[in-house]
Length: 426
Image 1: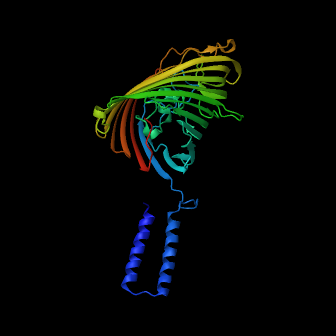
Image 2: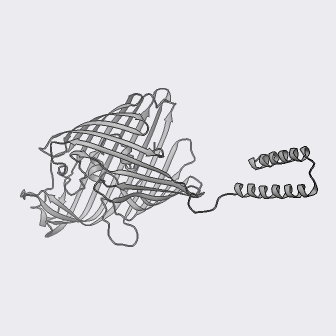
Image 3: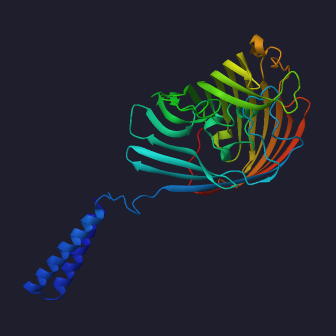
């Protein structure tokens, strides 16, 4: 029975006791009846569902992620990986660096939709919108709809925010092919199969604003993504997941500066590329926890491989235009081991392949078509998490991503979480 019923019974019992204790006349009874009626009316109002949208009617979960690093680097972090000068180069920061703080606001909008906004606070001032999307919760049949600005569902690491990474930085393949993460403004639809084994497929269409796309004024969509994931448990101690993804977009007048050429021009040249970009990827993760107890010890192995083909027109030094095509790829493999509560260590190996460019005759004497060098990097980390809301990390890396410029790197990092924050993906 409802609490309203019990409250009414209690009121009636108290009033009945009062009436028996003193001989009440008809006027007294009438006054008491009117008081009971008013009280019941107030109870009904209090029990009614709240429909007001004013202050206090909406109570979102708010969290703030604070993070910072110290980096000791032997080489200029602005120098890109060899053979990838026309790609993004997020790089690192030297010395003390506040990094990017995140503010997350999330709440159910109504029984059918949920909203999430992630705002990135720049240490130099200003704010940018990292994520801002609406997600359905009542479509049924395993369907889930997301629309707004969000990180793509391709690969494994792409959807994870920076504070959930297992290392200070992203693998080289993410840094060069995705500018750390692929995000876009658009729509995503996923379907979760009604099977014992985890299986989902999804697709996205978007504006194409995130690298490697070019944000241009256009009707329709500028990028598309397809992905599928399958996984399962092996007993209570092991679990795995495998994924496939395909990303396609267009680049329009994408200018890259300081690109080296055959003549070794001081400071490089500025090239412009327009054409199609298609990337295929595969990801794999396996987890093991003795007796299924993740709090004490666990081992996590994961790896991803991406292969991108670009085909179009290259304008060399913004003067000579001819055909251009290249296939580039990269992969990483990493393991993270929690050897005791609160303590983890991890090892990661990154490798890139810049490929061999097919250059039109007009630029054959200008553009380097084969770098004959494979950038690599090896990273070792140790972190300590006093609780689920704080983490301290030290990381060493031997970076050979730039030919002839080997770099031994050292990082210190802290990550602090304030307020309510939702769980991250598997």
